[in-house]
Image (cartoon, rainbow, N blue to C red; front, top):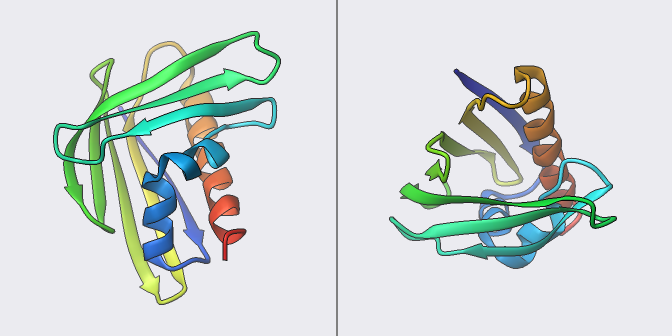
Length: 137
């Protein structure tokens, strides 16, 4: 099953793209709640390149690596990946005007968490991304 989440970001597409793909930026926004963080991010943004984002509870009680391979890249338009577990993810970047961008993530669900939990978690991360981008003007 495929789920979509999206947000309108008050920031130019060039900056949105940069913050989405820069490991330095990723570590600042890539968490679903305030008790988690992303202490490490690597990103080889080329076709066949890989990414790895370490997601960790701030109290040290849990952590995991979110990893995958890039299968399609259209700068400032589209990123498609296959996660390590085989699920497909696409991220679309749509320029609304010079100051606004829509980001839409489409992802295949996994079996462990409910669909509502997955949608809520992915949306929370995307909302953190929006907040980070809009604060970087």
